[in-house]
View (tube, rainbow, N blue to C red):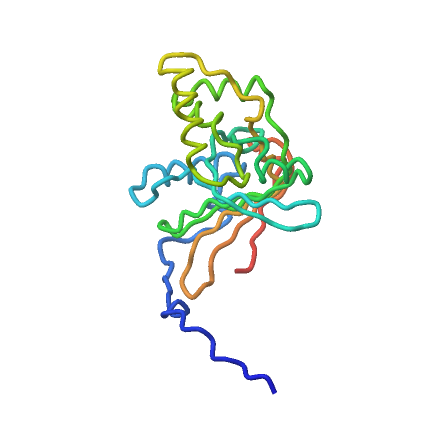
Amino acid sequence: MAHNPDPPDLGGIADLRVSYAEGTLTVGDLAPEPLTQFRTWFDQAAASALIAEPNAMVLATADTDGRPSSRTVLLKGADERGLSFYTNLGSRKSRELQQNPQASVTFPWFAMHRQVVVVGDVVELSREEVLAYFRTRPHESQLGAWVSEQSTVIDSREPLDQHWRDLHAKYPPGSSVPLPDHWGGWLIRPTTIEIWQGRPSRLHDRLRYVGHGRLDEASQWRIERLSP
């Protein structure tokens, strides 16, 4: 009979616990339309010294075989259409969104005992909108969009650094950096938005907007409570 070794010592990981007791959440607490509610919580997270990057969100995608992947990206827009972010169009996330245009993002504001989970369909942003945002990026961030073939395997960092030096010489500070063809943006059009408030005993408050329309129109959405 095969011997089953003892499980590895995880150094007390299983004993790590946080008691969530910073607030409560009822349907009456929520704005009728999800965009107002999201902006209220986002503004509170941005004003809090506890949240380093309130616009950081964990983006989950999947390929056509259902294999998932996730990573952290930065929210760069929130309006009546949905949530937008920008990235390399050849990256794994973009390839998966091209094959399977659905995604979920989570805003992990755990220091405030909150999170927001958005699920929806995804469409690529227009080149005009991408260019308008690209022009607002710092000069070195514009160069960075050219340097990296995101998600590809590289032998070492040196070619990356050399490419950076070459581009910096070609486009010094103050010059106009062209928009790369391989760099663009994505818009998540929500179908559900879950507002999560931590509560004691793991009996958290979970309220979810369900619908599919303009985020600033309450008539497009209903609110339901989920069991924790």
